[in-house]
Image 1 (cartoon, rainbow, N blue to C red):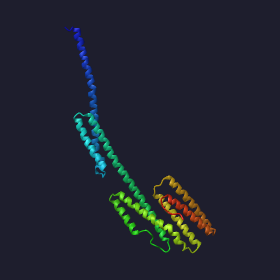
Image 2 (image 1 turned 120 degrees about the horizontal axis):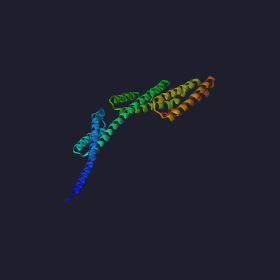
Image 3 (image 1 turned 180 degrees about the vertical axis):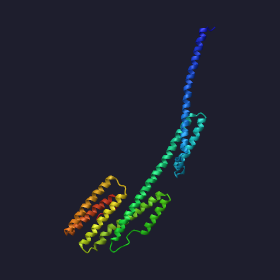
Length: 296
């Protein structure tokens, strides 16, 4: 027979074991409840994301990648809810975390497209300003020719390209507008370069006096300076290129002043030579800014 002492000891040990089991189970249950709560919070968060303006913008966008990510996000959320209901906490946790990552990737994709579009719009404005600056120089060069000529630029083609570019822009096709404007700019620059590379041959026979030749060279210098100012104001150049351009421009300015001084003293030969060297300096600066002038 079991003595009372043994019976009491047995009961104490049994109670102790029960308490140990109970205390072991409680933390596990508390941990699962905490994990479930965290999962539910994440589900609530991603559902708010899916109902947000950002989600609507993704759905309305033309990005197939972003839309696919959005669809996959919704599928993962639905699966995570189902896993949570079935007590599959690990699967629910993994699914909801992945859904948040995919939604974030979709939103970032749209933001990149927006930034790219904004940059393209800025570039369009810049290129359009360049075209106007080049056209101004081109028209000035034509006006100065004797006798007047129509010049190498196809005005009808130019006008048509500008209209087409504006139509693309109005319709939201920014990339097509950008491409056409760049082509238009290159067309105008080519025409301007064609005039400038051949103008000396055209004008040499027209000079009646050294004073006429000096005025021509001086006007050509001033036109190059104006062209450089317009290009610099409307372009996006790195600091080193701007610094070199200004150095060449300053050198040309000094030579121009010396040329005027020579002419004031009656020495047209030295004045014309100095002005031509000044033109070469400014032309070198224009080359740095992307204007492919030949230096004569």
